[in-house]
Image 1 (tube, one colour):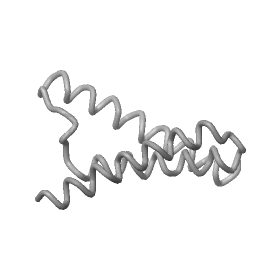
Image 2 (cartoon, rainbow, N blue to C red; image 1 turned 30 degrees about the vertical axis):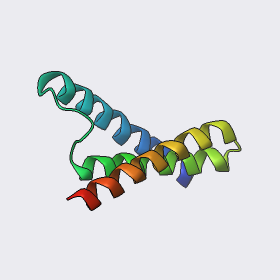
Image 3 (tube, rainbow, N blue to C red; image 1 turned 180 degrees about the vertical axis):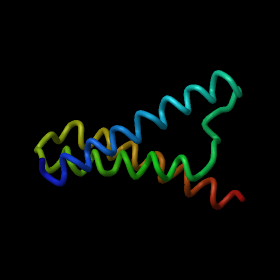
Image 4 (cartoon, rainbow, N blue to C red; image 1 turned 45 degrees about the vertical axis):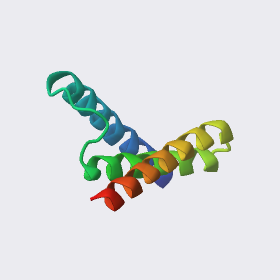
Length: 84
């Protein structure tokens, strides 16, 4: 396996587990998107790895979609750190 394929698989596994955990906390704890910053940083880094991998594979549409998610998480993290 190539290094980027392993990183992509690891990113997808971490991202899927975080999404499942986030949905669970939405339902059980009635939380919203204003969760802990560490969750946002981990999810943004997973999206970044997947985005870079998509660009390397010349899948530009998916790369830009994931890059947009990284940008959205970056704005959210910046806003949360400035507000506190």
